[in-house]
Image 1 (cartoon, one colour):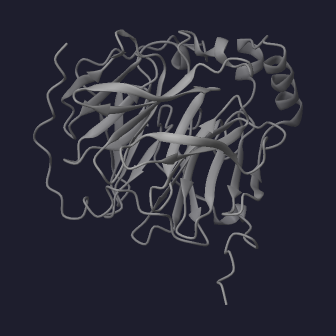
Image 2 (cartoon, rainbow, N blue to C red):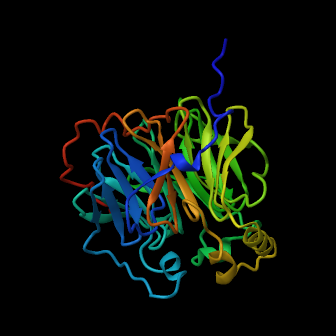
Length: 357
């Protein structure tokens, strides 16, 4: 008899939610290592390292261009450096998709950093959102939009997002036409690549061929994830469920292997979510309407990461939060490619050279 899906009768108890980290700045993406260490994207231009005992340190390159105007909430989301998605390279250095400076960076754990790529096919790369490494050592990135001011891309009729793969010292577009491409994840066998389309309100997937080509694009699960359907981050568990967040409506959801949707948390303000939905429909998004949203345990809920020594602790990243909520999941997460590599790793001492131009 097949084992019952453990998420079907799972409920999150608010009293069971705990927190880690303090005074974090835009902790959008979280990487977890087997020893309990967390690496968190930080708006100061690098990452925050949170040790298993809770001690934290900010690791920021000396070249960081971090700036924030006091009193203007939107400034830290629209100006300067904005580390967004993170991944480890095979040496344990940190790949950073910088949504503010429009480039992919690589940084050692002691803060030495360089730009890996900032153009594609001779043009500006666009708003680099996420970076992912697969088991074949290929590096993948998503670009949400080529529009410089990403707020102008919060519309349903602008499919200018794309996915690119790194090879031979540069990135090449492998699939495009996405509506604000966000996080991507492979399934356990890397047969499919799952793609978040934030303004499309859905999760797409594509079949991956032996050469790393993508084909047979389709929507996985509902064609829309419902009210306030702005998905952002996703992660698989070991059963095959796809966990995810909806950013401006502050929802945590799960898609079962069959594509059925379950909402586990819904902490958004209904009136403010309605106002933003209307603005996106009419292409009239303003600072006031957008930045009035975001509340709950992880305001502007942005990502999910499985961690803990047994991969059964689920951490939630956010864009407005200053700490990271976490709780015990009903099933362990799917290990990422760096999981076993991180066991016993020594401090990396070098980063790969940037490609010649």
